Image 1 (cartoon, rainbow, N blue to C red):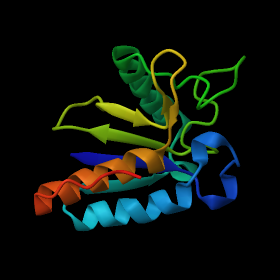
Image 2 (image 1 turned 30 degrees about the vertical axis):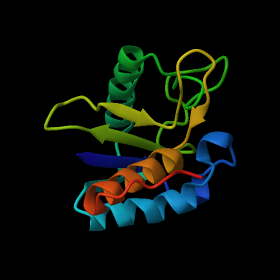
Image 3 (image 1 turned 120 degrees about the horizontal axis):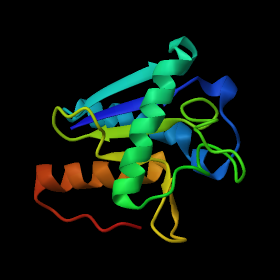
Length: 142
């Protein structure tokens, strides 16, 4: 598994629900890296706009396959297109194996009118699963 975080730094971070708990998410990424999970952080301030758009399009394909919502998470009600993707709203892409396309993207809205799953939400669950695998003890979520 490889986790790739796209973001532009704290100074561009919007105070929006998709960014809830992002400071903690950075710490969780470090903990997962210590457990052997590959983590890459890409500064989108230094990434060509074209490359960022291609990455957003890959995330959109995942969203279509999984029936999850990302258009409004990374854009607005009227303007999708990844307006805030990896900038004002950080994006975490999850890769299983060596494929070109991610297997998941966070934050996202679950199918239908489901809940918003933040980067922190995903990383907390992932860390719990990794701890359970390491110890063989099931840890109950709060």
